[in-house]
Length: 189
Length: 189
DNA sequence: ATCGCTTTTTGCCAAATGACAAATGATTTC
DNA sequence: GAAATCATTTGTCATTTGGCAAAAAGCGAT
Image 1 (cartoon, rainbow over the protein chains, first blue to last red):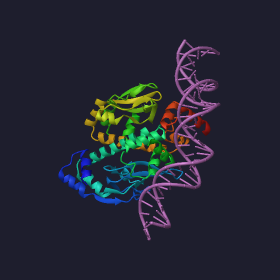
Image 2: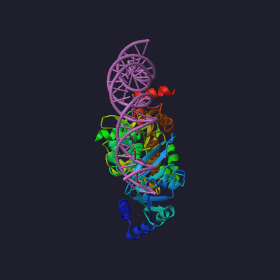
Image 3: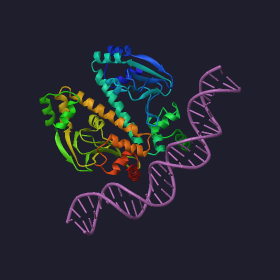
Image 4: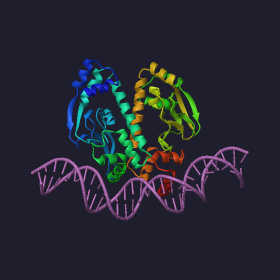
């Protein structure tokens, strides 16, 4: 779990005692591909940090099609903060897109950290802001491009994901059908 | 400028003295349609709050096409926080999409507020997080939909903008050509 | 009202993508 | 290793959207 400590130390300082507190409040879980980390309609009850594997955040549109909003891979927080903070039902599914190991902080433990570690909230705030900005920055360049360009940009944005998750997840992220993506890939080789 | 005070009081409490401090650190400016609030390549030096009118945030892709990332209308903050906070050059243009009145806090004044008003940073954090979440939430549903559906969703997301800005801005937001948008609108009527 | 300018609409054809179904390939299970 | 299941590719055709150019509409200045 040292990866997580390294990760948060980028955003603020913690002494050894505080680091131990953090580690003592986390548990490690493993999700098999397709299992859910959290589900639409339920209040998100935990904050996670991906140790290895890939998750995807997805939802269903009004035609029942599954849309992948974004992927979350190693060394990133996974949490629906809107739902977690305000204790309102989430609107999205967070699903393992491949077998995944996650370090999990149940709500109570996470809140505890906020109470006993001075500066914890500030660190979390920085992490969340950066993640949100990243989401905006990753999505925007995909607008106004044809499917092939979007796919190439996806490869840049998520260089280590394409070979680990089903083609259909990538297609639904790019907003095209699986068949179209298959053809696009053929033309690129 | 009372709109701005109402706006920030949603995110935290301020007493009258603090409110006066805020107001005394702002100036009001007016931008004519097409004038820039900030430009790509320059460090963003101010935080704005739209009193009336509409701005758009845009950039140019590698084909030289102008892409509208999003719109900002009344009672919203306008700032490239990435650029403003880290004092790095912005990658986007913020342009008046119609004649616009903006309440402006130059960098120095804004920092001053952070020093003298306890809790100011927390309020700003909340505002920025919410705005970022909103950007993500507004963009995501537009992926994986055909052009007509995207346009209809745009009308829901930004109900008061379509008649105030050029069609071409909306088209570049939706990722379609102006001609296509024109045809789509014809089919909807 | 007219001119000049910008914005929007339309026509035409080509290219991209979707829908659906079938074939192929990969992986797991027994 | 054969069967079953799941993932990917391919074929065919319909539909959507783009590219380009011209026409029409809107609008401000004189």
